[in-house]
Image 1 (tube, rainbow, N blue to C red):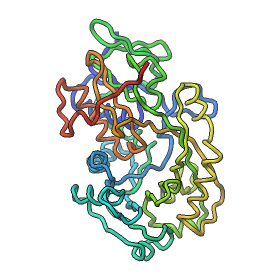
Image 2 (tube, helix red, strand yellow):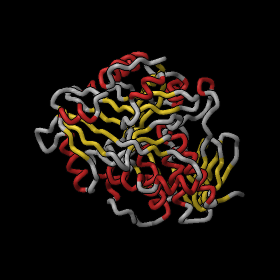
Image 3 (tube, rainbow, N blue to C red):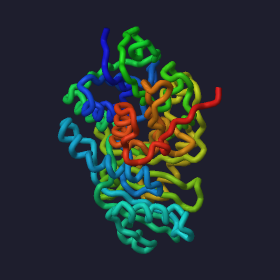
Image 4 (tube, rainbow, N blue to C red):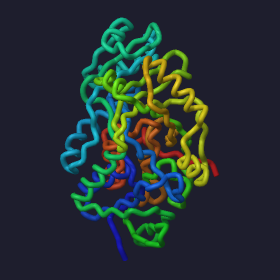
Length: 397
């Protein structure tokens, strides 16, 4: 019988990070999760949302907890790259833009307050200064920007997962590239059964399976989560646009009209050797509640309507583009009622959950993994942000 002290189910951004951090707690750790499929369109199994090259990373955030998770993660990026030998972080800076605040609860006022509290080095810019410093960008009149030039930019989530897994393996973590179908309690351990029929046992199991958490028999009852179908657009750029946009930071833009909210990644070279400008943030995405619905969504290229909306928005914020081609793609985000991750033990304490990125976990995944590792490895809560923020909630059945 193969047995481990800790088994992490899910080899995505949070699960891979949790496995690496658990290696500091025990020499008996396994992480189980499938590799990226060679052909998404025909894949019959589980998918991940990290099959991409661009995620924004920054400390700037209106929520102090998310900002702290990001700050702590960012401070370890270079160490993880060194440990693994895999680069994933591009420090090109970040620009957060919204209306000049009129009240202390307005978006940019909250961002500014959190930045001050965490001593984030950034510049505050008004309309004219934004236009002068970023002449290739266009925002509505009356905007305010906070520019974080350092400790910000973008990461390759695909390479970040590879780096976490490689670093974990160097610390003795066993990687099992399979899909887990069920978790069952026994008198001495938790029995984890994979799709091929392999059974491994763990004294403790940490479930970090994102939007697929309620689609397999992994938990005694379903989590209260909303899994949103997301569409992103990639504009393939020619050499002139790539050259013109050199030095462009990652961007989060929240104008007065919520329909205009978006995030934009600067030109990034993808595995096909081409450069793409990426945008996301369509306000009317639907939810997915079944395994079949999730699989169908991931096999496709997202919503045609959302793609058109996003492309038009990108041309407004970055005028003068002459794309070679326009592509769309699909992913999901997993939302919780609190807007925070779930990092909590359930049942008799042998199983824990680390779920609910809320569209913000890519940049913060390493510290989220650390939260999950500390939670499942210690009987008492030892993390310095209070446990109630991360308490799991369960769906009514």
